[in-house]
Length: 162
Ligand SMILES: [Zn+2]
Image 1 (cartoon, rainbow, N blue to C red):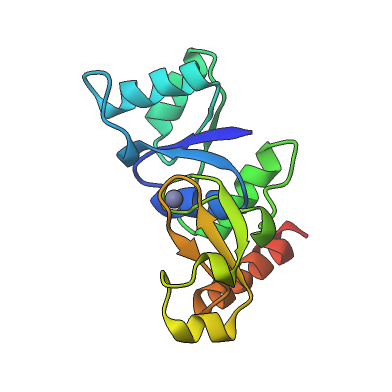
Image 2: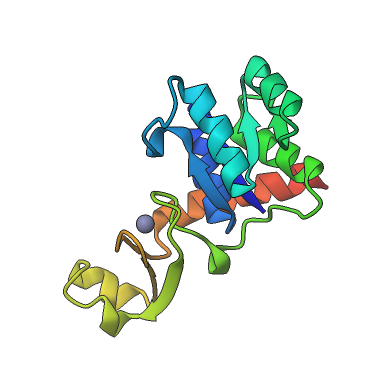
């Protein structure tokens, strides 16, 4: 599944990428039409992406053009993930071993510590064995405190999904 999300859903975009989904965020690409809405609709059509939006009018426009669109009613990101899961045939489970870069949507490659030596602080090399590098932007990830926040949200999501 591939998604495109409107400018109000930047947080959801990052979460879906962590869940391994291919997601384009409205604010990450230059407008190709006179309005951002129009640019989103064109891109959704070109790439066969499912539109996720908080904007009911935009959702209606997408449907009238026979595009796949999911209108999200809730502001809470966990509830949004549950809504997306319920609308799609496959679950968007958050699997940290199969994530995309939350910043740029690039694919992450798991590497050993020798490959990131000199690029992360020394103490991280002592504390961790596994690192992930984004194949597109080069950002390096490791299971740190941020990871615990992610795990907590992932757990909350699993509970709500039932
Ligand atoms: Zn990246």
